[in-house]
Image (cartoon, rainbow, N blue to C red; front, side, top):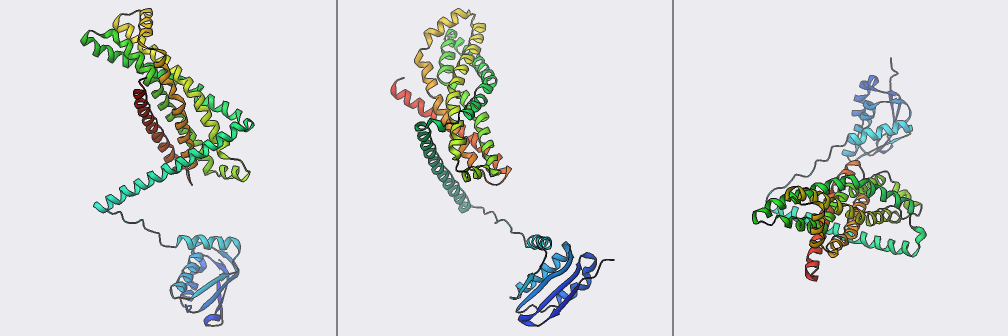
Length: 374
């Protein structure tokens, strides 16, 4: 049979002192409930637990409820002398006993709609400001490592080039071959109506070299490598590894961000050249099959249809797209806070933002090249 708990009282009013001893557990709790409820809730009282041998959740709940009753009456019941384990249990029970905070009621109607639009606009504006500040921090770090090349982390740079470039060759090649085949098939199908199916070579050459090669490469890199950057840095953020780096006077932008951005700026142009070749290969094979051209005739026609400028126009976008993808991926990774849920949400957001910005910059390039007559 469990040893009974006992409550000794001395003094009154502000001098009321209570001493609890024995084992305050479920089996011994019932006789003490009435005594606790009969305590006068006024002034300042002290409950000494230094002689308490054991306590379970039910006993801790009884103490927490008594403390809450004193507080509700404007009085104070100070609990002292509890052993660390018992104090920890009472803290947990006291915290769990608080009424849960209900989420604010969702409002409907025109005003609520306007408020949501306004809130979303402010959030987008704030994020744009933060991203511009992050861009400034990256440029400052680039100047620092360029003036002091010894600060460049070549091992991390080579590792990231392998991950974002070499390992991406199969998926980029397969995708661009298929897109080249689709372009050629649709081009022949439409141009044949006007007797101009031979111009499919021009369509495939210009489309792949000027737009599709770099655009598909950038989208694949954003989905594959940009998301990986966010997840990697976000996980380090959750594990407080980045805070530890700052404590050791290591700059996370130099150590984590720059190697990834440099790797993308080097690898994406190379991937674009590979994508251009594979896209032309797929489009050429389909064109030769549908238009009855020999490979030599296709290449001769392609040489007449495209110029070196066509290739360079597409390739010139690659470093810009690579920088944007790397910056967004690292920026969202550093914004991760607290949990794996935050990592997943910001990883998805990173991919969406990267692809959106790539398409925006592609449109800007198109307008610029049109204005320059290129």
